[in-house]
Amino acid sequence: MTVLHRQLPGRPGKTPAQDDACEVKCVHPGAVEVARALQPQDSCVERATTLLKLVGDPTRLRLLSALKARELCVCDLAAVVGLSESAVSHQLRLLRAGRVVTFRKQGRVAYYRLLDHHVTVLIESTLEHAAE
Image 1 (cartoon, rainbow, N blue to C red):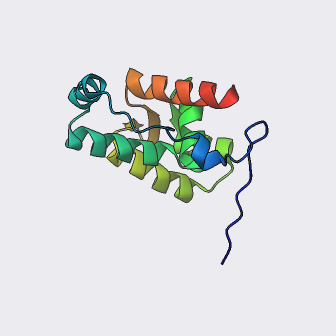
Image 2 (cartoon, one colour):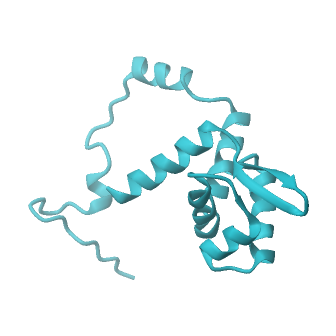
């Protein structure tokens, strides 16, 4: 079986995969040592990737975006994202378990908000980056 690769314009004989790789084998021990020393602990990486997976869902990102400005009740959030209250409650349970949102009860109404400033910055930065 023959595999055809798209060549890069202005780079005869180079495919995109080849262009992303080093052309010579050269390891910089000092740079590798510094980069390894700066690696986060495995447990931190696990928690961070779990957080990013939670935020990476389109419905949950819409909910979080709605909560950037102020706390909202489940009914209001359902109206904002155009889903049933049941579906929104399910997503909010996941976000609460992942420590992304918190809530307070006022009578029979649950009001949700982003857990802390870190989450607010994450959502704002993500949306800002995507808009560029």
